[in-house]
Length: 342
Image (cartoon, rainbow, N blue to C red):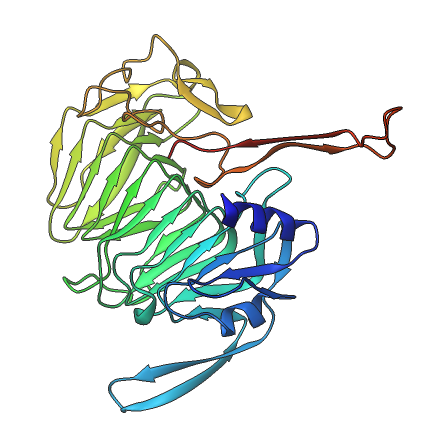
């Protein structure tokens, strides 16, 4: 609670705040200064607003040449194990890192990022990273060695491997209750569950290697039930209890298909998709049809997608301060703090 209050107090002043065990809170005027000051196990709080990354120098150790390489690019590199908190990616508390890339290097393994918007997020040789309730407006890229990275309740525009090829050493992710939008998505050594794919590319929008896709909804077409959703597999893949809206799934490569539902009309699937409500209609065949007995899609599991898109932190739900004292000389103040359950 103390951390949240410090964060919320900093929001109105556009202050970046670092909370460090055994130290007084540190405050900074911009994102670059705050990132430069990070140490392992710090907690960085991002205020509401749009924050320009701009040109930034960052240093990376190259194991092949055994020397340090300095990069200058529109990117900020997280090279420590830290936690980074924003106020969510929608609403008045939303914070966005704009015009650049946020990179997590190998040294950032074990970090947590929640409640932020990015232009581009890059996972570079990292493991055990947790990213939740974040928005990626351009791309999520992950490559190199690593794995066991969790993404939950994120809205992602595109996913790709920068390496360009599939192999057993590529970074894998575990994505749960995420929205994927775009044209082509590649997953290697990954587990994708209860996600929504809004992809209308007719030529292999999904490329898989050694991955499992379960309880997901694929919007193939909005007007028909006959369009083919094509995919290619390199290695192996499993499709379990998925819903294909507007068409059928067409195998391209070796895959195992179990209990998938096909040829369902778009208009008979969601409560109000144009308004962003992807809950299932009561008559949908995907109700209670997931591998765990709950709904297929974002609102399955025992903890469905949180429409607030806020991180699991306390926040000011109501904050009003009067401009004048009353007849007794008291200043009317009404503050309500609300906390997420998870």
